[in-house]
Image 1 (tube, rainbow, N blue to C red):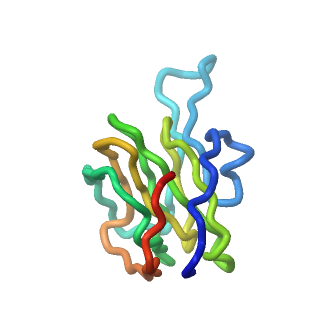
Image 2 (cartoon, rainbow, N blue to C red; image 1 turned 90 degrees about the vertical axis):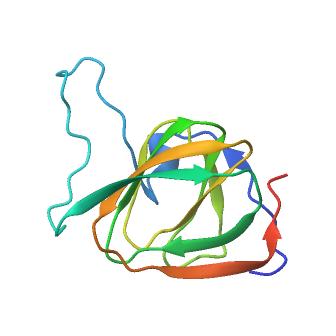
Image 3 (cartoon, rainbow, N blue to C red; image 1 turned 120 degrees about the vertical axis):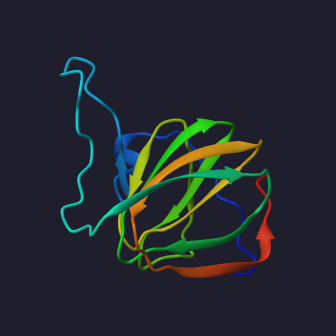
Length: 139
């Protein structure tokens, strides 16, 4: 992936994000409690808080055995994604609402400002990284 440019930042919408996963939006007319995502194959799950300092995109990675949910808490989060068979075709979305990335989708969270992200995923996951040399600046 050497020589690739950082992708244009897109607005997050369910339609645009559909090839990579699901935007977790509740129905404003629905019940107060609305399940938005369920993983019936999980053998447990974990939640975490990720601190993302501002900086370039240095890698993308994927988890073949887990979906991964990202919910922005504060900051200028961006999520870079690519379909499982096309890691060189990066797309970038402003992460201004929660999403769930499907298994094996390439992804990474980067930021323009100090950022904090809430994450939920399977308790045990494997991962496969691709390191970008050189890293892609966000501009």
